[in-house]
Every structure is written in C-alpha cells, then in structure tokens.
Image (cartoon, one colour):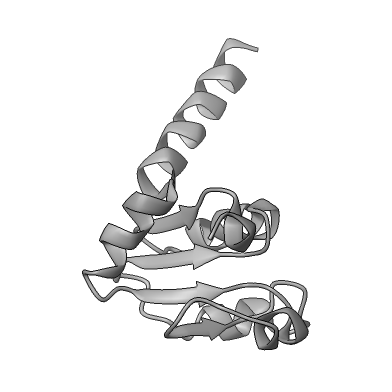
Amino acid sequence: MKKFILILFIACTANEKTIEVVNKQTYLNLMEQHYQIIDVRTPTEFDEGHIEKAINVDYKGANFIENISAFDKSKTLLIYCRSGNRSGKASIIMDSLGFTKIYDLEGGFMNW
C-alpha cells in the first residue's frame, strides 16, 4: 500500500509541473509570450465566441488524440474550454502524450 501511495504522489507531482491552472490575469500575461492557444470546446461553442488566435481541437471529437498530437510537444501551450472541466481532462491526456508545459485557464471561457 505504501508503494502505491508513493507512486500516486510522484505521478501527481509530475503533473503539477507539466499542467498549471492559472487565473485570467496570468493567462493574459502568458498570451503576451505568443504561446499557441488551444480551445477544446465543440466547433459550435467555438463559433459562438473564442479567444483571439485560438485553434479549436474538440475534446469530444473522435480524433482528439490524433489532432492534439500534431502540436509540438516541447512547446508551451495555453488551453481552455467552457468551464475548465474538459481542458483539465485534455491536459491530463496531453501530459500522458508527452507535452511538457500546459497552462489551463481557471474557470474556462466563462471566466474570460
């Protein structure tokens, strides 16, 4: 049991280094670095409004893993969804695919 807890702790610690949920002001500051912005909402949600220069990669889409894997894993990415739920899940998948730094907008587009 102790080994399991230790492994779980290490895994969670590793994710904290790769994935960081940040507030709107920090996100705006990061945007000034010209990092790629990924909107993981549906195309309909994206069409109703999105952050400027964001690219839509639908988390619920059948090809999400294939589409997100096309991005450079060594580059920092900014990610968001409507409320932070899907982007949180997408970030975990991206971490498992080898992405090195992901900033997730706290509260998602609703907080924008």
